[in-house]
Image (tube, rainbow, N blue to C red; front, top):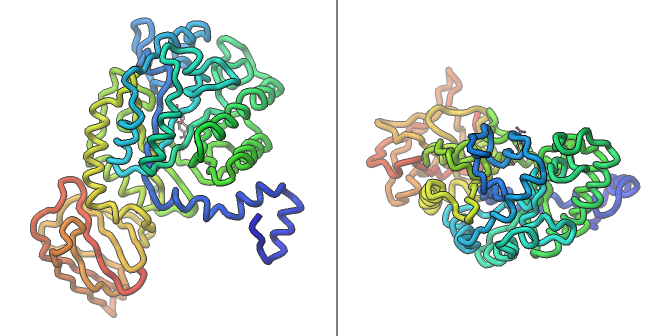
Length: 439
Ligand code: JFZ
């Protein structure tokens, strides 16, 4: 336990156990890697990739991993997907390599989604990939190895509240009828905790546990789960969706962009099309430019971007996803300095032309469209030494700064842009005399 000098610490000690205090006390330290990297890969993968959105010849509306619920598929029928799940093309190195190429620094995979199926070897329930499928290997082992050598943090999504396979989990009323608090508490003790223990002891250090959809979990139970994770791996982060705002960081709604800068630690999970789990008929892909604008928009507000891929039941990430992630990666190679380890925009409002991120002594203008003539930015009080495109550091842009005493208005004019530097989003660096101050 890290000691603090103040009585506040003693007060906390009296109220909570030491591991909770430790986790709370060093949150800033524990979460710094996550805050710095800004960009991660989400992977929704499980039995739902077999029907891929179609059940008994019928297109089931909604997100792919919800097919069991949406079509109210009985457990004994849904279980029949397991013998059909054989991801012979799964290659952990390829997936992790793609995440790395895209510039992503952490990877969150659905170890267990709402359907209750474990994508890892579990002694707790034989409803898992090793015991119930012809594949009979543990993909998390390979992912852990590949992540380690690529320098990417491995993280697990775990559905703690909904579990449509268990009478004690929330959600499946068509098989099990109404759920009692007692049965739910038993399920937490007998499945959730022991499976979390497996996830936190079988694969080395885990970056975070991405809990989801708290529904009936009580505040005490949420706190208890968080404590449980920290007891096994004190540095492992816990997502806000563990429930009751007790997580280490907050999750925005899916695909949600806040209207302005936000305080604290936040992440937005987002899709490339309209589903998380693979759906063969979802071809509604966002363009690479849209995806980069999302990344930039979120970074300018201090929010992490967790971008999802939904591999097929054979273990293949759809080519349309691969193409987009590679294009994002090419952009990140050139412009990553304007995303990693940045602070949000100093302005409390948005601009039409693009977004801003900062670092000590630097401001990055992310331009959605390359300026035709000159570019005007109001309100920046800090002196600008020089300006240049991040993609072409030798190119010097003209900078004029003025102050209108009557209007009390600071203006920065940038000119001589020359040729557009990027087909998606172009970044201009301003070197500043100190940290950016705006009026
Ligand atoms: C949840 C899951 O139900 C879904 O299957 C997927 O895993 C997604 C990432 O998370 O869905 C949610 C949860 C919370 C919100 C929206 C969808 N929300 O807060 O807006």
